[in-house]
Image (cartoon, rainbow over all chains, first blue to last red; front, side, top):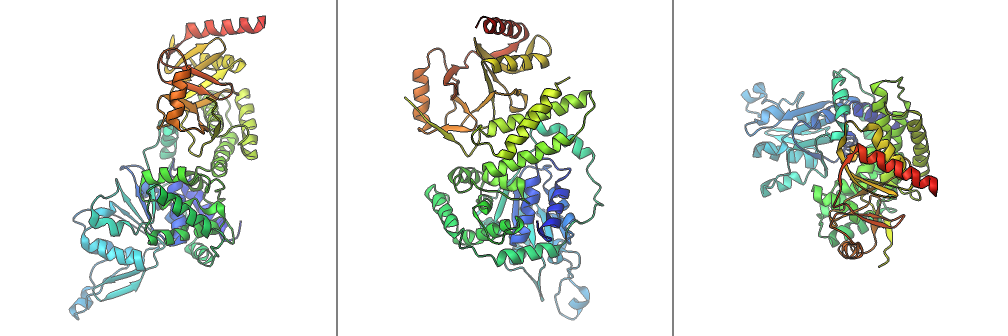
Amino acid sequence: MSAVNHPVHAAIAAASEGLVDREVVVELVVLCAVAREHMLVVGPPGTAKSEAVRRIARRLGGRYFEYLLGRFTEPTEIFGPVDLRKLKEGVVETETSGMLPEADVAFLDEVFLGSTAILNTLLGILNEGTFRRGHTAMRCPLRVCVGACNRLPEDEHLAAFSDRFLVRVFVEPVGDSDLEELLARGWSLDDGTSGAHASMNEIDTLAKTARAMNMARVAPAIAQAVRLLRGAGLVWSDRRIVRAQRLVAAAAALAGRVEPTEADLWPLIFALPTEHAQQEGRDLLRELLARSESSSLLAAAAAGSLGPLARGARIVRAGDALLVEAHDGGPSRAVWSLKLEGIAREIDATFTEASMPDDVATLRKRVAAAIAAAPAV
Amino acid sequence: MRVDFELRADVLLPQCVVGVGPVAVALAQRVLRDLEGAHSTQLRGVVASDMIVLLGDTEHLPWVDGVQYLGRDARAPDLLLPTQLAPRAPLDAFTRAVTTRARGPKAPWAVLVAPQRITSLAEARYVERERLVAWIAAAAAAASVA
């Protein structure tokens, strides 16, 4: 792993620690920051959407701006107040210090509740990276804006604004099987004083690397993906097709590659606009995505592609972490043994003997031996 | 109708676990070990002389080496299929073939690829300690005679 990738990888790992089932959100924020694209997280309230974004922003060392929009939110609450001294001179300038126009990472909860004035100004920032209001016109350092909502908007007037969020991720409340882990991790969640593991400099270097990549090797595969999706009635705009390439290049840069390969196509799934489209897309593109893998974005590559390499890598990471835990007996040993069975169950439900990658097969042997040595109490 | 199976991209959520032969005995012993009270409130199942099939939520399905997991494909709701495999035939045609070939009561049907078996789960009921103990004893007796 390069000198640039390593701190970003460390930031992702640190941000994901303590979160249950939100690693994909953390990883996609980083992918979008490198690709200079924006992201929408769709899910019910209380599903750690803002916590996941806040944690990765902190670990990346960026200036972070977060706000919960409402129908009566004033533009000054997002972009900053009018500079009164300048106003007396007849100049309408905005004091942007500490506000969204100066943020590296932004999170806007209930993003579609913003007024027309707010959304129109945001459109300029998301589209051109420029904040314009009154006499103020400035380039914004924003690497990624994450919008959150409970459901995708149905209002056609919001379609143009919604389309600026290229990446979509859909989250649900934690499943029954992960509740104990949620309670344990939630109890020990950090208090927000942990420092940065990386900086925006690394993100910018990776972005530059991504933009300079030669896409020739994967262009046919991306075109084939678009054709397959169109054949099933999943139509992408030309803009979305072109911009989706940035995600593929960003995935390659984060994986430490000098040019994208078939392993980096998995982000295409997250550029599909609805949850249903993403599910269909995984099925339609399963052969194209079968070789997906990423050393930095394990969870996202697995979730995007459902490809065996990516899924296997995620299972191996979870299994290795569990085997390292030591238990001396008592109820915790029984719980640990059940978790080991959960890993074994996931392995056997995911792979046949013939399709099992070598590292998964090795893990399976270790897990089976640990279960045999530690029967449930 | 001979049908080949292929790896599926969208692995099914396990909703059923099956043990055949010695694996079935190990599975039954595993279930018995955690069974509190006279019957389970989490696992329902059917048995044959050499097979146990259990239905339940994913996190409640036990694991022993050699079991197979089945799940439901939304396009074939009457079938429980291997979680990693899909028939190469269209699912509606495959479902018709299964229900035609299998005798006995109704859906759902558990479909195993290796060994090839189709088992009705219409009569599945909550696992009972007494029946499980008796089944294990009968299986052990059959194994010692064989």
